[in-house]
Length: 62
Image (cartoon, rainbow, N blue to C red; front, side, top):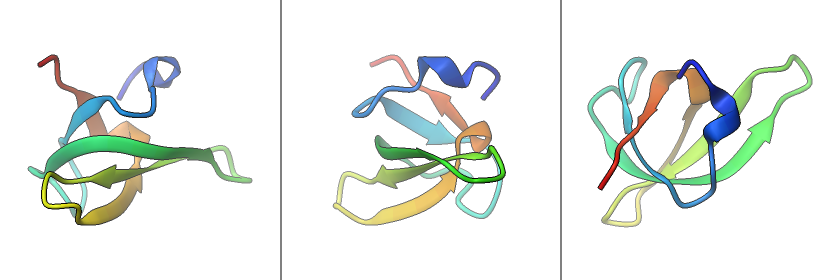
């Protein structure tokens, strides 16, 4: 994701790269690590959660 300033808890997103590519769900728990990387938890519709880097996601307009 190019502009991480637009991330908001609850936004619907799709993972565009990385291990979880193709999965989608609601953004939860946005966190900036000590090294400056922004990580998020994505909660899928079936309530399964996974963590990914914010740069790997794209916000989906519903």
